[in-house]
Structures are given as structure tokens and as C-alpha cells.
Length: 134
Length: 134
Image (cartoon, rainbow over all chains, first blue to last red; front, side, top):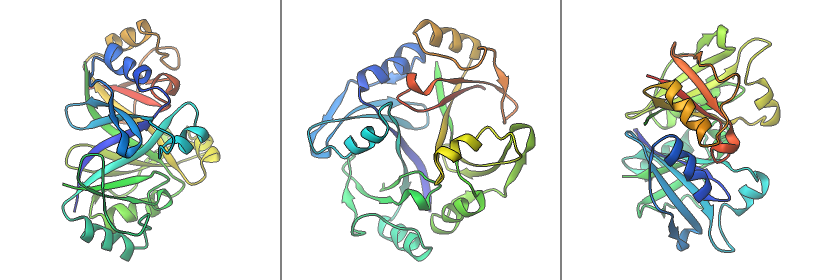
């Protein structure tokens, strides 16, 4: 049921600085920063042959990653995202197995314009985990 | 120069418990636990269509992930690993760009039997980053 690792999201105070090592030292394909005000983040996409790394910087006062960066001033992994075919079926199976789906369990439209849900980190080895319907 | 995301490594106190959600709720292909005593870890490999997740549990008294789990008792992302074609060239370019390669800069043989190096998390958006020559 689980599909590809869609992306690894790294929260950092400064995406321009963080993307420099990827571009200059590792020779990665790195986008210009993209502002997503409706999601409260500025994103740099690092395209790898098999997946993406998303470098996230807080944008605006209500950014969902501000609290994370207060706890982790040097930045760090914010979440991983796996693709699923049917997000409601995936959520039902997660809940049936005892995992906690965050929020009201209703999929929201994520930063890629597709339905997403988040699974509680304590049920995923300590890692906040997003599932995205593709 | 940078290649595929080879794996995402998640450190957890109990790989059997952590792998259960991947196998039962997400329907992922999950290996039996594999003991790697020379690396001080027990590993469960979660195979996705495009990459791997490695769930790591400390093995033995000198495990390299014991201190991480003391700081993060609920577990968490330990490192990400990118593939490179020539690890010495990659290390030289990282150092030239101001990134810190950990240890003495000499590649070691990693858990997959291939040369690896680690880059300081502070130079990679807060995420400990492994490069592996493939």
C-alpha cells in the first residue's frame, strides 16, 4: 500500500544557506526559494534522481515550523512523506493498527495540492510522518 | 555529483515495534531484524519503490546510536544517506566549500560494505548526512 518516499523535509532558519552546500559542494539540482504563504513556509527543492529533499524556512508569523526551530535552532529533519494510493483507506488502516493520525483525521490539501495527513511521530519511530495521496 | 537518496535512518529503542506500523498499517515490505555487531546496531530494512528506510536499534554496549537515544528517548531521524560516485572527490569538494567532514576525513567501510563519510549536521540544515560511494 505504501508507495514512494515522496520527500524528506528539513527545517532550517535559512534555506539559502542550507541549499548552498547541496548546490555547490554536492552538485545537486536546487530550485530558487519558493514562497508558499498559505502553508507558512519558504521552500527550496533539492531534486535527486529518486526523490526530493525540501528545505523549509518559516514564512510569516504563524508558520507551522516556528516552534520546531525554537526547539531545534540548528534546524533538523521536520518530517518524511510517503505516497499512498488511497489516503482514506491508509488512514483507516493506521487507526485500526493503533497509530494516531493527527488533527481530525480529515485529509487536508498539502503543499503539492494533494490530500495529506500526518501520523504521530511516537507511532513512527520518533519521526513525524506525512502521507500524501498521489 | 550527488546521486540517489540511498536511505533514511531512524533510530528507535525497539525496531520490532517500530517496524510493525510500517508492515501492518502501511503494508510495506519489511525485513526481519538483522544484527550488525561490527556497527553496533540491529537493523530492520523497509523497502520502498524508490529508496529504503533503515530502522536502527542499539546493539551492544558501544553502539553509536546509544547517546542519540539518550537525548531522544522516543527515537527520531538519525541520518540521511546520499550516493556519490567518487567519495574522495566529494569530500574534497565539501571541505573546499567550508563543510565539515567528520572524523579524520578518511572514508570508512559502512554497513553496506561500501566507503562512507559523514558530514557535520550544522552544515546540512541540522541533519547528520552520510555519503556513500556506489
